[in-house]
Length: 199
Image 1 (cartoon, rainbow, N blue to C red):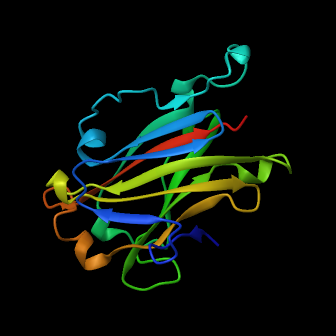
Image 2 (spheres, helix red, strand yellow; image 1 turned 90 degrees about the vertical axis):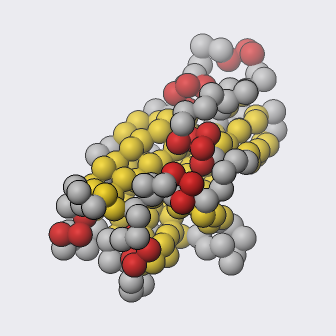
């Protein structure tokens, strides 16, 4: 079963229509900068690298900053005609690992909601001690970018908890109000993922 966060628990955050803002997460000497809405939508470059590690001794070891951060856009055609319980995006790579977006068009254990999750691909092949933190934002894009729905969280992914997201990402009637292209019946979901390498 997919893990989830809720705004009520204080673990996750769900915000509609944020026009700007930054979230900083510090762990030891590491700094992660997260960008929202118009910055993400228009590809505004960050003023600092997406991941900064002050330990200069291991420059040749591990993933480079650009490999620890990635974006993915998933266009789902004929969304209103989908009758499957769940859909998975094609896998994409961030931080040396494959990820995919999982959606439940009619809700995961809830009715009348779109459920969205980020998942580690091939989790059954991961070594028993494998775990990584990832900070991620998932957005359902509205025809008016200022009305796009964004949710973000930080989660420790590991072999037995390889997916995380929102069972009640948004109500289904709202999905059909400006989020689906009327001409092509296409829903666009965007994700940005930051894998956090701990010292």
